[in-house]
Every structure is written in structure tokens, then in C-alpha cells.
Length: 235
Image (cartoon, rainbow, N blue to C red):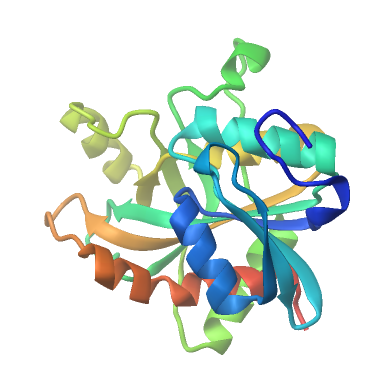
């Protein structure tokens, strides 16, 4: 076990799905995995391990924001030997053609800063997804009749952002959506030789002001989880 994860060494699978919300981790594990077992509840950050089509999978909450995700991703990779990490979460659409409940698959993740910025220092590192996972996720989505949006997203370190000028410029440069974790996840995966991907569901829209209510969010997130699992274990 680690400071933040109470699981035993053999209780974490090599493939981990990482929603921000620990309750969403519980929902995803109990809905999609066979025989899910609670393996972590330190600080209420729930983690479950079960199987999907015979493959071992852990679903571990990451908390909100890159600093929180960085803690869990570091420990999962360095202490538990995790090889594949897929973020499953919500995002805010930044383009007019991206609608509520659409699936966004992040090819790249821009940011102003991440916890890794202190290591990279003056370098503007370009965090990107693992190509194999991304390609498999697109294939899985299309097989389910879903046309995903694939491209760059923005990982913000501020939820209540008061920079409309920044939003305008990110939109102008084709950024599909904004969320708060993927850039650090991609950077950590690159540093440690792991694979990473973010599969997101649009829960609100920065241009129109539309937003899903909490109940609709939960019922809409199933496609995202199934795509992530199929990407991790392509047939």
C-alpha cells in the first residue's frame, strides 16, 4: 500500500480507469465489471478491481484537478506497476459542433501549468495520448455507432475561470473541450513509459451555457466507459 492507496500489491490491475469522482468509480465498477471488489477507500477515494470480459481492471478515483490526479497516477505507476491509465470523465465543450453527451477522445492536452512543470522547467512539453489506445478507442466508438470528436483539449487548473479571453483563444485554435486532468496524466505516462488516454463525455457547453443535470450525466456516461474498456482490451 501507499500513502494514498490502501490496496495490497496484487489488488491493483495493470489497467486502470480513472474518473475524477470516487462515486463515479463505484458506479462504473459495479455497472461494468464482474465481481468488483473494493480495494481502496483511503480518504474516501474509492477504488475497485474486477474483470471485464475476463480481463482484470481497476477503477480508481483521481479527485479533481491535476495535483490530485498526479498523486494517484504516480503511485499507481511507480508502486503498483500499472501500465495503462485511461481517464473517464466529463468536459465542457468549446466548439459549436460539439454537443452535450458527445464523446471526446483527447489526442493532445494543452495547459498553462501542470505539477510536472517544475520538472520540465522552460520546456513547453506537448502531452499526447498513446496512439494505440487512441486508435482502439475510435474504432470501439464507431463500432457502437458513436462518432467521437478526436483532437486537442485544454486541461485547466482553475474551475471558476475568469479569463474569457483565454477561452476565446483556445476556441479559436480548435480546442474541442476543457477539463482538469488529462495534461498531467499524459505527461506522467510519458515520463514512466506507461500508456494513457482520456475519453470524455460533454456535460456542459461553454458557448451555449447548456448543462446536463446530475442524473442525466450518470446515464450518459456509459458509452464513455465501454469505449475505454474496449480500447484497453481490443478484440
